[in-house]
Amino acid sequence: MSSTAPARIALGNYGESVAERYLVEAGMTVLDRNWRCGQGEIDLILRDADTFVVCEVKTRSHDGCGTPHEAVDTTTLDRLKRLAMAWLDEHDVRAPGIRVDLVAVMQSPRGAALVEHVRGL
Image (cartoon, one colour):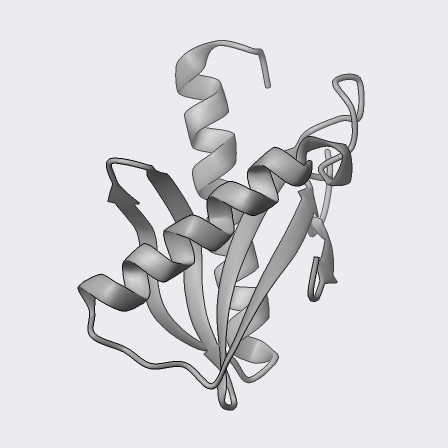
C-alpha cells in the first residue's frame, strides 16, 4: 500500500479487525473499539478474565518505517494509561486489574497476516 492517507486508514482498519478477531479467539471480550475523547483514542478495550485491557494496534505492510513495536514508546504508554482511566470513569467501571497490550500486525503480500500479541507493556 502507498503512504497516502486513505491507504493508511484502510491498513489501520484492517489491522484492528485482524487484532480484534485474534483476541476474541484467544478468549477476550471486546468492550469497545476506537473509543475517543479529548485526550486521544484507544484502539481496542477488552476484558481478559478479571483484567481490563487497553490494546494498541500497530499495523505495517513492511518494516521500512520501523516495526510496530518501535512505534510504542513511553509517551504512548502514558497516554494509553490516562485514556484507560478516562474510559473507566466515563463508563463507571471498576477494574480489579488494568493492563496495556500491543497487537502488532504485519500484512502479508499473500496469505494471512502475521500477528504478535504482547501482554503488559
